Amino acid sequence: MRAIWKGAVSFGLVSVPVKLYAATESHDVSFRQVHAKDGGRIKYQRVCSIDGEEVPYADIAKGFETEDGEMVVLTDDDLAELPSTSSREIAVEKFVPTDQIDPLLFEKSYYLEPEKSGAKPYALLRQALQDADRMAVVTVALRQRTSVAVLRVRDDVIVLQTMMWPDEVRTPDFSVETGEVKDAEVKMANMLVETLAGDFDASEFEDDYAEAVESMVRAKVEGGEVRRTPTSTKSSGEVVDLLAALQRSVDAAKKGRGEEPDSGSNADTADQESGEKQPAKKPAAKKSTTKKTPAAKKSDTKAPAKKKATPAKKSAAKKTPARKAS
Image (cartoon, rainbow, N blue to C red; front, side, top):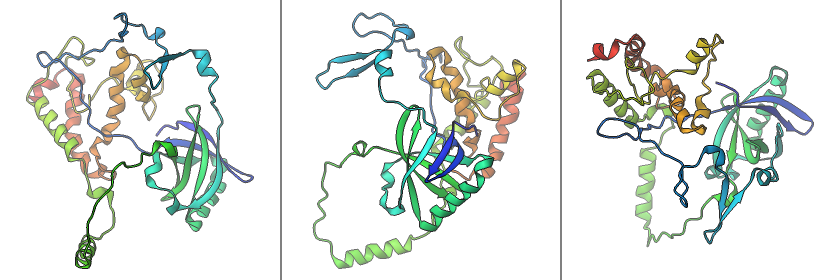
């Protein structure tokens, strides 16, 4: 994993230097929009709705639409005046009982790893949270904007979970009419709950949809149902696997420049680049070499299935696989 932020947790006079890692990643299946006739990718242009002209990325500004439909254009100077912070501190505001925070408020999760100098105070904070059965409510600046978050313990690691602001949680605008609930019905419902009672184990569940798509795509590749288009980012000898496999990886690119390859991928930023850069986004999704693991602990059981695809991919680089697969 690659650290996305460095700073320190501060509570009282104690400061714990830490690194922040994204704790989750999406393995959702994604598809390209293509021309059914020839498999060419569909491109989108940035076109002004008023003059119909294509707008260069450099000429695109941020706009805020008012309730009556008027558009307020904000300049870089305007945006510079907005409150922002680059603080590297995770400031503990208070410690609260775990049952006081509605899980609906939780947004994104991050792992906190202590620097070597902060290992002992990190362990003390972790133990204190566990013993008190409380979460630490903190404020932290991520992406130049202050967020409210909580610190809690998962296994032996402190997890930071950012939270929604209260006005971002919607109130249901409907009521539930139940009518009379009889005691016998309640008793039967309780019996059903007891019958199905058990402990939660995430490994018992798997993404059967993603597995079905992967099997379908692999079968089509092995059957030679692959179209090569002029806009394809892959060489003619590559084999296409689920979620755009074997696109040039960051490590391969770094090796080509004579640099030491990283253990992780920087492709997370690719989807924020221009249209020409978008193909590079696929290797990041291909982090789903953990796609072997739709459920958190499935990696061991999924590895064999993925191994089958590996030889095909390697031979793909030698421009022979598609024929061998068929």
